[in-house]
Length: 336
Length: 253
Image (cartoon, rainbow over all chains, first blue to last red; front, side):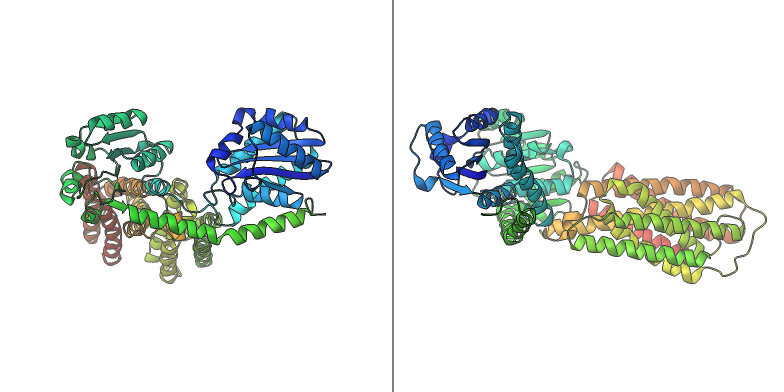
């Protein structure tokens, strides 16, 4: 029995091609079952995320399996696949590829953790639909073990690689769990929206949105389940909040040292985290000199993200060494 | 016997601190620090038990015993409060303080402590509660130091070190500083009430005044925090300074 993988991902196909091949999460099991109905294919797992769609099969003959899979994919998408969009692997290459995928080495954001859960879901769906047996069970179990080892023994998932995630991590370093933290957005731009969503996803419970255009503030407040504040009132809200995300298009600083000094006593000198993602900056750098204020601008946040990316890239060799060692140790998926 | 147990307690504290440091350097958390501190605590109990037997009262008869008691009290609060933090890191900061106290204590333990046949219960309560409160104040100072380190790193945007990654959040540290200070002040209040109840000679007056001044200073800091607010940095510096200052005062009074 041989293992074959056919797929396309963000390295090989643009989004307008990838989106044709997406299999929704609730159909993964059924799709895997359909694979097993193809000639010569005994087991199948379908993995589908926004960045990749991959078909893993165990078959008697890899040439026949490849042909069958290519046909299957094309009929599924209703379009002819171009050779450069597709990759095909077999045997040890498949095992190595799956381990890299599970470890986040093949992801768009190197080392991201979400893919581990997505592969697990895909495998579980196939398992529950009865589409896996001895070969693919061993392959996926091994890949999960290797993925865990890679993540615990290297720094591949250390640090945050996007401005929003860096800001959220810093907020947690200051306030711990964010369930008691209140957030104010000054400006209703896309960046502040994304950062605020990340803060909400980690537990922040109260969002105030202020913007020169109240309509826009109200719209974003509705989306974030928060509260819109008139632009003239943002200083009053500053007394209550723990985190401020500012991203207006103002040509000069909006938040001066005096604004924060004026509310320090009322805030009882609680820590205040200011995230300035506007260019030109919305918050006067002198505000950061106030004792209980932690001020981070877009450059600082980007530097941290770039540093983390560099650190993760430095870990690739160590990760691949672990994958090679683990696969060699198992001796299960060697090329013949 | 007590001296050997104190040496063992000190070696264990050094070991706990070293293992904690190695863990931080290599970017992982170690359980060994808390295990070493637990073993330190057991040895300290042995020291205090032996010295208590020799004296026939609470072992606070010389500076060596006071420091050993203080180190025990610090480890006790660490073991109680520790779970609220990332334990090994609080241990990393606590172990050096315990080590310093115990190293000094080893040299100051009287070889043949005088046995007491009549026990002044209020006097014992005063001494025991006062030194116990110092354990809480010491741990508050340790948490305050941790806050100052974290605060500097956050202010200077130095976020890459393993120490930064392992430090607990600012809010947890500040909560701990305030709670431990309040706990220490509460215990010291009992110690001071006991001092007023005990039989005392003229020579006890400076000691009592120093104890009350310490109590008033800590209380002042807490009142300031709860009433009008104080910046976290000033609160931390205040807690650390008061602890060092009051230790110095009691060394000479």
